[in-house]
Image (cartoon, rainbow, N blue to C red; front, side, top):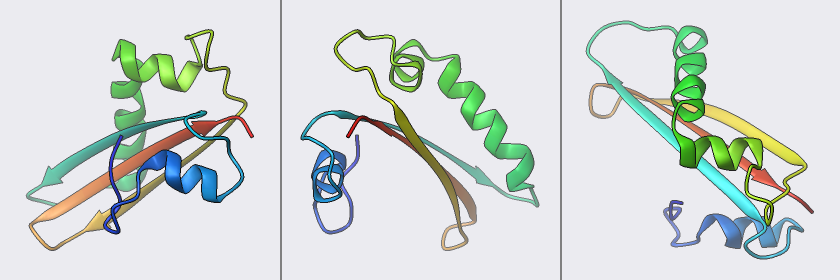
Length: 95
């Protein structure tokens, strides 16, 4: 889990949007590129890396019985402040 720039945690943001505290999961991925790249080509690779990682897969596939998530949202962003970086996040939850 990651803190936002304002110091909030994923569960703080989820609670502010109607989700019970701690009833969410979050996965993150990032890559830095020195040349050109395609978000459409890189995003599926990041998802595959989550699926290949047991802790990340557990969050995405709700394999832990205490977390039966029913909703998910995903997004990617690009930054060019230090080279070219792509960040992807997935958030799962159950309202």
